[in-house]
Length: 95
Ligand code: SF4
Image (cartoon, rainbow, N blue to C red):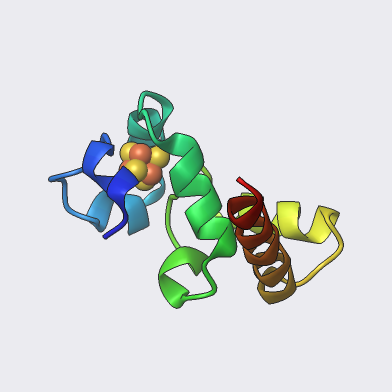
């Protein structure tokens, strides 16, 4: 578990709402709207190539939105995640 997940508004809730019906997804996204770690969650989903991030609500976004962002940036999710991770590594080394 990443450190940011301890502050998640959804901590302690089950995952079902984040992978459920349209109504459940709407409720989950409302929870995300007030979450203090929305950006961390969103970027974790964008970088993560694992199946867990391909589905469900992450950072208030649904998979179609995340796919659209990757597409708009002109890459596959894997390539986008690889480039983003490399940029984060470079930034951490320079800090
Ligand atoms: S943004 Fe949403 S899914 Fe992500 S940690 Fe917060 S409440 Fe949970």
